[in-house]
Length: 109
Length: 113
Image (spheres, rainbow over the protein chains, first blue to last red):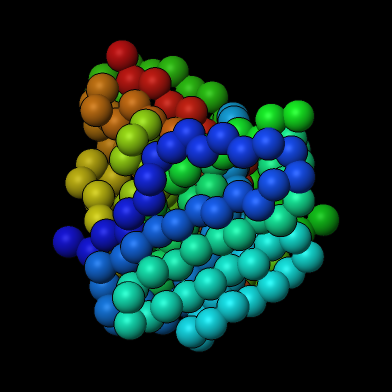
């Protein structure tokens, strides 16, 4: 069974701090990795995608991929209370995308 | 506005009564998929479609049917719903395969009693 695993949290960080979210995946054939943000009662929203080893930055977000370790992470700099949400990690290759169960993030004002 | 539209948003039904959840996208995406989301289990893929008339099973297809007669529409059919299909359902679309990331619909909260 192909899996994507995340710590369910909650992860609590003070406003202005860096939030670090992590996930691991089991399928070495996965080629594409995504981070989605899901506010309570809402649908997931794509915030980052990463396809090759290394870092990818977009504004306050940085995604990191290490295929040798089968590890994906998301860093949120200068965390804001509006970043409080569940963050879903997903891995895909071909026609299927597997999601982790999500990490709940709380940013305290 | 580019979007995926699901209907209904909320549905309560009785065991065995056939129902359809509609999904439509206006982005000319080739790839569409259905997921269910349950607490602690995350999003699990039910069915996906690579293009018109091309569909395949995801990880939890039992009790569900889909069809893709037009590129924009991808309805989810529960022929005989059971209480274990009570869940939050999301339709999603992507330009080609899932490698491009999804745009999700607003979700359908289904309760089967």
